[in-house]
Length: 165
Ligand code: GDP
Ligand code: MG
Image 1: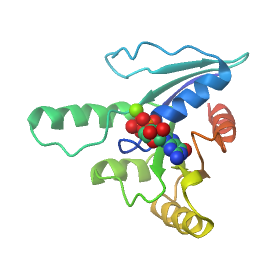
Image 2: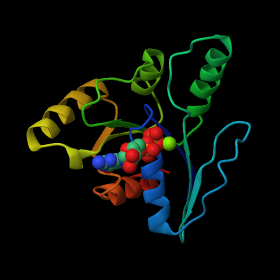
Image 3: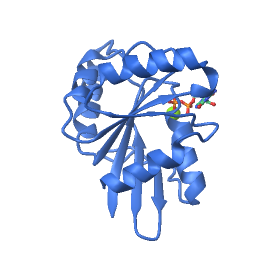
Image 4: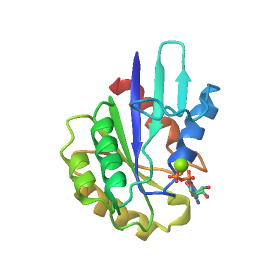
């Protein structure tokens, strides 16, 4: 099994931390953040019977000028080539700032894993409210509350990725 996973989310939600957690556990290779023509390949996790290539999307930002807008178009088309999309949000976050991008996620034909990160910073009530909110917003996704720094649910998410390849 081999496949490509694209991790999408606002800046600072924990995308790189999650990638490091995946890679650290599997003792794999981190590429030198080289820009390829189509994807930023940031990590490769090699197992006995699988290979997962991980990339994260450059921070989702509102285009302020022409060049940025065309870059965003590139990002938006590139992410649909993935086998699995990870959409990451953090506790306390309200929404993805780019609405068109958000629509692509909610209409995605590719499996989407919705990760609510940093749950180590929340109390039970906040966790329940946020979980409900995000599952409503992205009904097509499989939902996982996680803590990338504490490693909570990280292995389960990884196992699910492998299943989906
Ligand atoms: P990225 O911009 O989405 O790649 O986010 P980073 O992975 O760089 O993380 C941004 C900040 O959030 C860093 O200071 C991380 O240590 C912190 N962070 C990431 N995951 C967690 C988590 O599960 N819990 C807490 N408390 N902090 C986290
Ligand atoms: Mg990052």
